[in-house]
Image (cartoon, one colour):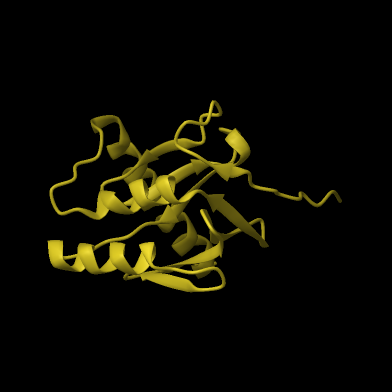
Length: 146
């Protein structure tokens, strides 16, 4: 049995590799791991109920120092952002039961977090990503009942 090992690159907005698949209406960041479209994951993103809450979250993110972390709390999940070093942040996920840190520069993660703005709308083509998330949750519920 071959065990896959995932090493995620540092994602940047100006990457030539098409790593950002899209952002769905519920603010999940869909990422092709290592630019591989066959391995796409959804990172839970920042959600807020007001502009003042967004400002506080952005201030907290921008003030992170190396070794510090902040957690984005969602209804069904949470996502932790780790400040690894100056201009390097990690978001931890599990892929095939292995922990993987997806690395981002500050500008990229800042841009993703800004999609929490109450007036932000996803691209029409990314609405299907939200539907895919619902289908995944239904599949997990069916598997768990078995």
